Figure 1: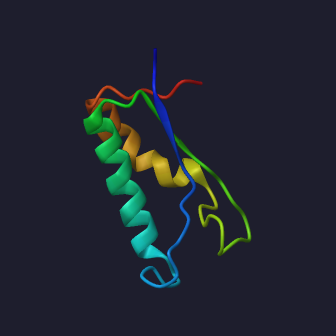
Figure 2: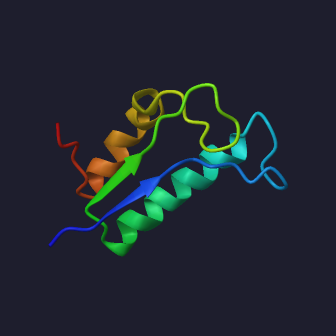
Length: 79
């Protein structure tokens, strides 16, 4: 059995105001924690023109630099 986790990049407007740099930092830390805990996959939701539900406009741009680091933990893209 494999386990995955979904990240919506939902901002907490009280502590993560626009331009939401803190959201990206938090999601990145959560992905690293999920890897450390043994999750098999991480899904990052893409949302356009939203500042309420999720603020990730392009998951490939966001995850691109992390693929090299996540591969070190055994995470390999499944496409």
